[in-house]
Length: 249
Image 1 (cartoon, rainbow, N blue to C red):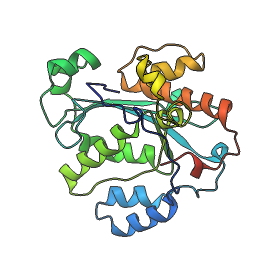
Image 2: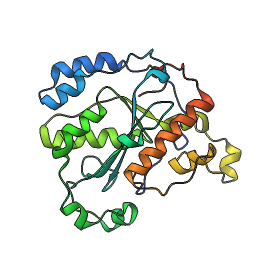
Image 3: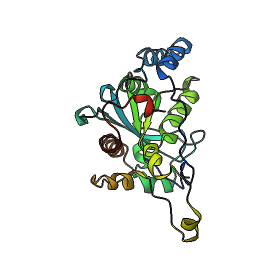
């Protein structure tokens, strides 16, 4: 995942529990509205009911590397996918694509994700792998670390190319950490002493569960890292019987 001057979505903001979305009903509505056959197939695959225990939910961890942080003007450079459930991470089914973004790579983004001009010059546009991507996501709940990247970027890319966006449920491992470490605003003593909020970035979150360090900013590695983090979070603070509606957004 690309972090270029990223504003922390949970910096000092208390976590508030809102009503869980009814994604099963939403998918039925979107399937009836979709015009592109690939999106029709994706939505018709449906998703689980909100009361389904997390242990029964098919999952896929996903991560994007991007040219920047604005989905309206920046583009996707690479996508990593790792299918999983609570018991297994299926690395044999992992997929990784380098893509040609909508804009030129900046020197700043190249330093972070390491993907070069020559690699994207011969890479496909996302539309060429869209069918494969949507089939990999169909029927699954997507696991990400910070939902402000993957969902809005994919939505923007499809709006730009086929005139239709894409919606899907996500479990955000960053938000699950925020529920613990950002549930209350910092007190005046913390501010006076210059104490910073607990980091909920991917590497720092993994370290709290004694998960190994992985070099960041490779989409496939970060997807794997998010998958392992979710398993640790469920084992530590939830249970296999936790309804998916308590976790997804």
